[in-house]
Structure formats: C-alpha cells, structure tokens
Amino acid sequence: AQKVTQAQTEISVVEKEDVTLDCVYETRDTTYYLFWYKQPPSGELVFLIRRNSFDEQNEISGRYSWNFQKSTSSFNFTITASQVVDSAVYFCALSDAASFSGSYNKLIFGAGTRLAVHP
Amino acid sequence: ETGVTQTPRHLVMGMTNKKSLKCEQHLGHNAMYWYKQSAKKPLELMFVYNFKEQTENNSVPSRFSPECPNSSHLFLHLHTLQPEDSALYLCASSRDPGVPYGYTFGSGTRLTVV
Image (cartoon, rainbow over all chains, first blue to last red; front, side, top):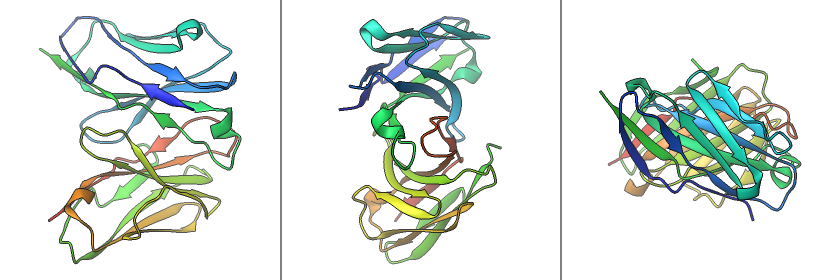
C-alpha cells in the first residue's frame, strides 16, 4: 500500500535558523516519483520539486535542499537560513507506478507540516 | 497566478442552498481533480476527470455533484450541505496520464456551511 508520513505536525523556528521537514514514504514499486508542495496562507499548493526513484542525487535550489534516501524511504526537505516568507504548510507526496500507470496521475499526500518562521 | 483559477475564493452558504464552485485551466492539461482540505486532516481526493470523463469518485456523498463540460472547466455543484462540509476545496489539473509531472493547483474556495 502507498503511504506518505509527515510526522512533524508543526514546527516553529526563528528567522535564519535552518529547518528540516521529514517525509517517509511506503510503496512496493521500484518506479515512483516524490514531490514537495508549499501551501502559503493564500491557499494554493505550489509545486517545489519532483524526484524520481532512480535519481538519488541530492538537490539544492537556493536556500532549499532535498535529501533522498532510498535505504530509509525518506525524502527530507531542508530550508537554510529560514525567512518569514517560508511560513506555510508543506506537503510531501508520492506517485508510484500503480498510481500513474492508470488513467490519471494519482498523488498520495502526507498530512503536511506547518512551518512558522518568526522574526 | 498558477494557471488554474477557482471562483469564488470564499463562499458562505446555508444548508438548504444550492451553489456551484468553478475551476478553469488553460494549461492544456487533460486531467482535473477536486480535493477537499479540512482543518487538521490530509488532503482528500474527491473526483477525477480525465479527458472530460469521470474516472474516480472517491465515495463522495451525493450532495456533491461534479461536472466537466470540457477539458478546461470543472464544476462542483453543492446542495443541502452539512456544517462538516466546511473546508477548503482545491481544484488541480495535470498533464497526460502516465506522465507524473504532478499537479497544478488553484487557490481554492474556502467554503463555510452555516
């Protein structure tokens, strides 16, 4: 069964701190895709990254970095030198072969982690 | 602006009212989705339309009725809702099935049932 677990419900940090959001996934497929989305107070989920299961290289984009570890089924997201504008709910999601080989792409979302960055 | 537009942004309705939520995308996507986001609960997939055909109804009560007249437009018709239906309703779209590029989401409609 597919499942995404984001154990951290809420995280509160002070500006300029580094923060890591955890994501653990379950799938029986060897081919799958992992995603992170950001949901600011305005409501829309904004796509941040997509990673396929065959690419274990870590990715860095500005202050954002992602650590993909197949051995532990984790796809953690780190924000370096956090800013107030990073305050949002962050969702990790999974799409595996059973999900996207059908008639549409099915994303399985985690429950989300609410990040509050204080000045 | 994400390319997926939802209207209205906010809606307050009584339990006996009938209203509709609208979603529009001009990204050339073929699949459209309705999600429900309640406070402190995971995103719940409600309906999926692929090339205008409904491909999934995730055990949603009949008081929610989707409509997809074409690949660019998706509606969610609401009638005789309950207070527990108050939530953020998100529309999303995606490219061709089998290509896992993820979704593009709208900003949502914040629904309050009184």
